[in-house]
Image (cartoon, rainbow over the protein chains, first blue to last red):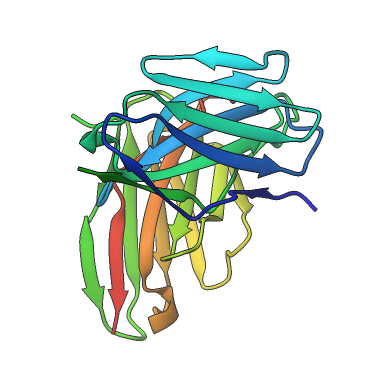
Length: 114
Length: 113
C-alpha cells in the first residue's frame, strides 16, 4: 500500500553543522513531494517541494534530493540554526489525479545542540 | 492576518458534548481539509472538500461531521465528544492544481474529559 515514512524519528545536530533528514515513499506513481516544518504549537509550514522530473531543488539553506530509483527523498539544511528545531514531515502526492490528497509521513524531530 | 484561521485555539469539553471547530481562509482556495494529529502519529485525514458542494470522508471520519458553509469556511463537528478524540486538529487549504501543497492553520487543541 501507499506509505510515506521516515528512517529516524529524532535527529540531533550540532549548531552550525548540516542536517540531513530522510524519507522513504512506496508509491512509485507519486510525482510531487513536499517537505513541511512544524514548530511547537504551530501548524505545518511548507518548506520546499520537488516534482518527479527533477532530482534536486535548492532553496534558501535547504536542498531537497529525490532518488526515484530507490524511492527516497531527503531534506538537507545547511548551517543548522536554533530556529531550525522542529518536526519535519515529508509528503507525497500525485498531481492531476482528480482526487489527489497529500500523504504525510510521521515526522522527524530535529534537535539543535549548542 | 493569518491565511487560514482556526477557532478556538484551545478547548476543553466534557464527554458527550457537541463541539464545533471552525476554519476560515483568505487564500481563495477551493479545497479544504480537516486533519487530526496525535503525539507520535502523523496527520490523519478526517474530511475534505474540493468545493462548496463537495464533501468527502477521509481515513477517520467516524464520530465527526463537517459543513462547508462557503468557499472560505469549513467547520468540523464532534456530535458527542469522547476522550479518545482528544488531539490537535488542523484545517488546511490547497488550490486545485495541488502545487504548493497545503496551507495549514495554527491548530485547535481539543481535550475531552
